[in-house]
Amino acid sequence: MFRRCLPLLLAVVAPATALGTGLLVEVPGDFGTIQAAVDAAADGDIIEVSAGDYDETVVIEGFTGLVLLGKGKVVIHGSGAAALTLLECTDCVVGGIGVEGGPGHGIRLQFSERCSVSRCRVEDVAGDGVRLEACRGIVVDRCILRDVGMDAISFAVGDIQPTDGCFVTRNTCFSPGNDGMCISGSGNVIAGNLVREAAGDGIETDVFAYSANNVFLRNRVIEAGGVGIYITGAANQVRDNKVTRSAGHAVQLATGSNHIVDGNRLIKAGQDAILVAIGVAGAELLDNKVVKAGEDGIEVDGTGALVQGNTITGAAGDGLRIVGDFGFYSGNTANGGEQDGFHLVSGANGSTLSLNKAKHNKGFDLHDESRDSEIAADNDFGTAFP
Image 1 (cartoon, rainbow, N blue to C red):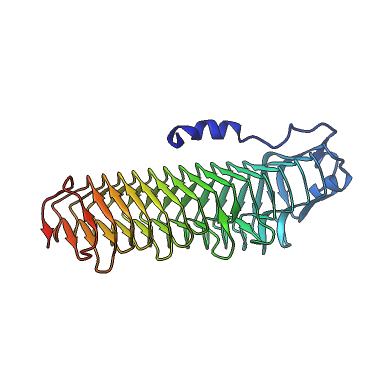
Image 2 (cartoon, rainbow, N blue to C red):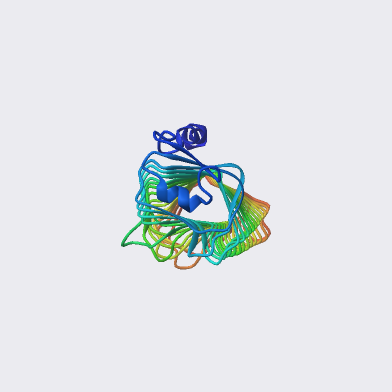
């Protein structure tokens, strides 16, 4: 179902409100600055900004249904904590606005609900490109974030005031100074985005905040300086993404439980293609394709994992390395690795292997040091030890 749902998902991601029910105000025709137009506006007004450079810091506070649209190439050069801030706004729309340079963030939303930011551009700011703080139901769609100093898109504040139920879709993030996207909160959908050459992780859930029931769908992460997709919290879903040449792991389940990693293409990771860390329980790794991982194809250190239908080729380490207890491994293939195809390490207890295949690995196709796992007769291993 998830493989077919992105076009439908993107079709319903639209501006959070109908465009403007009040007056049309033009900048610089009616007001010389964007902030002057905002100060004179009422709920539901449309502020249309003509192409040009605007040396100002814009704050939109307490509005419902206000629309700010750029006509042509509109560039704000801000000097404050953020070039453009929406504070305590509801159902507001920002579209076609650019931000270049400045010591703070590009576009910041605080304590706002059901607003949308679309087709905006943020370049060369010192902070985050787009930053959401304690928001609900925000849409960030088709924005371009380039060469920002921190995260391209960030959900900030954390557990006390999380950001929930947002859609971050079809954005392009080039060379952020930290992560491509840092997500916290619950029920967010991160879909169809491109992250290229992030200095940190490509996409991550915030290590300092609780993240649950988020969906990461059909994103592309290329040459992340850290992990491609880094997951904490509970019941997050990583589906149908493509991660290429990450310096670290392609996908890392670092903490929590009941995460799903399904249908991803993970190519030439610098470390493991998928790492399920110690303490992670109940992970499901389904139908992923792993090519030429720099270390192991898949390493499972957590307990109770379901690992099914994965294809691993050409790993520099083991194809599938099993360290954690009580996992179920079925229908996986590990071929052409530099070490073992399937490696159950000493102390890995109570796992079951069925209908797996491994051939042409330079170590053993099956290397069972655990002596406490059930290896069904329906597996197909070319070589085995002991």
